[in-house]
Image (cartoon, rainbow, N blue to C red):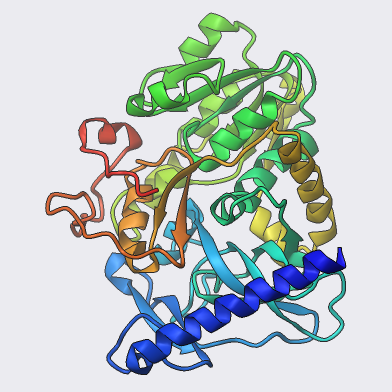
Length: 419
C-alpha cells in the first residue's frame, strides 16, 4: 500500500510538472490561452446569469485551496446532468446568485489535504459530489463527499457514476424496496439514470423493466430493458396489455401528465417516485408557460384515494439529501455497495460522449435535445473538436412557448459521439 501511495504521489507531481512546462512553452498564457498562466489560477466554466447558452463562458478563476476537512482535487472529468440545464435557466427553487461555476460531480486526483482529513493521500484517484463548482480544473469539497475509485475505473466512468447510480439505487432499494419478481416502469430509459436503473434491476432475479424512450434510441438500449415503448405513444395501454395489474414501481423524471398516468399504473402497495421535472424545460430559457402547463397537468394527490387504493407516492432529490439534509453517511454506504457491484462487473456507467470545457454549450444542447444515450462528460484535458457547419450545436433562441419534446428529436441529425 505504501508503494502504491508513492506511485500515485509521483503521478500527481508529474502531472503538475507537465502542466507547468506547457505554461512556460506558451509564454504564461497571457494571450488568453486556455492554459494556466499562473499557478494560482485555473480554467472554469462560469454561468454569468440565468438564461440561455450564451450565459455560459470559459473563464479564469482563482484556484481554491482546501479548508479544514476538505480535499483539493485536480479534476479529470465532470458529469453533466439535466439538473445542470435547469440550474442554467434558473428553473429551480431558491437558485444561488450568479456568477457561479456549475456542476455537482467530478473525478480526479487528490492534490492537497485540508486539516483533519484522514483516510486519503495525495495522489489518490477519487470521485466526488460538489455543491456547485465542479466544472473547473480544480475543486475543493468536504471529505464526506469524496470516494476512492477502483483501479480499473476510468475517470470518465467515475464522473458518470455518483449522481446516476446513487439516485437509481436509492429509489429502487431504499425508497421502493425492490425485491425479486417485481416490475418497474422508468421514463427516459436511455438516459444516465435510466440506464443505471436497468442495470441495477438486472441484479435482482425476475424483475421486469418497462422503459419509455425516443424511438431513435430503441436499437441501442433494447437489451437493457424487458419492454420498451415510444415515450410519445400511449404507454399506459401498452403496459396494461402486458401486465393487466400494472407495475410495482414507477420512476418519473418527467412530471406533468405523466404523474397521473404513473399513479394509474401502480399495483396495490406500489410506489410512484418523482425525481425530476424535465417536461418543464422546452425552450432554451426558463418558460413560465411550460412551468404552469406542467404543474397544471399534475393530478392532485388525494390522501384518501391513496389510502383506499393502497398506493405510495414519494419524491427523491439526491442533492438535497446530501447538501441540505446531511445524509452523507447513508450515501457513503450506498456508494460502497455500488462499487462492490462494479467490481463484480454487474454494473458499468454508460458514457454517451466526451466534451472539452470549451464545448460545454454544445454538450448542454445535446442534453436539451434529449439526444444522449447514457452520460455526457466534460473531459478537462480534451482538446476542442472543430464543429461541423450543420451541427445541431448551432442553437437558436427558442421561443418561450416552443415545445421540444424528446420524441421530436427522432428525425434530427444526431450529433457525432466524441469518444
